[in-house]
Length: 166
Ligand code: C5P
Image (cartoon, rainbow, N blue to C red; front, side, top):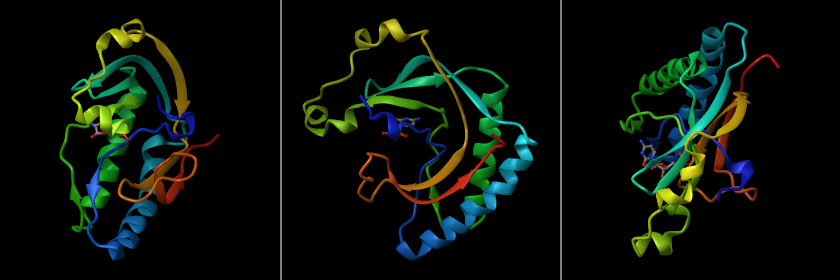
């Protein structure tokens, strides 16, 4: 199970091959603040976490309820992705964007993963329709998956922007 402080939603993943390009990525992130604020029109983005699903029996995650906030999150994701695409420097992963709040993943137990151990659906069946709660989007981080994690378990963060009114 993940540490609470490392909970996050990944909007998308990209490859930055040269360390010197990180500053371009930081500029792109900073450009996103005004665009996201324009999408939100002064309102908070309040996401509801309802039910669980999985990727390939390797990752179990809380799903985001199908409502207008989820649609706004998609609009924000597309806008941020396009801002990075416009820099023409980054290889952006094209995997379908399913917003997921990861609860557990086999990647965190590489030895078991190597042995072919999977996360059995019976382990989380009772949470299939569970309401986990809601969370207001307050921050967007540019994180590195390649660098060592922070002492609190969260990904190494290159830069952040703060969003929302409250
Ligand atoms: O850190 P994060 O919560 O984003 O990790 C989620 C995991 O789910 C990653 O290992 C990623 O490769 C995986 N994933 C997946 N299929 C997707 C999206 C993410 O297997 N469509």
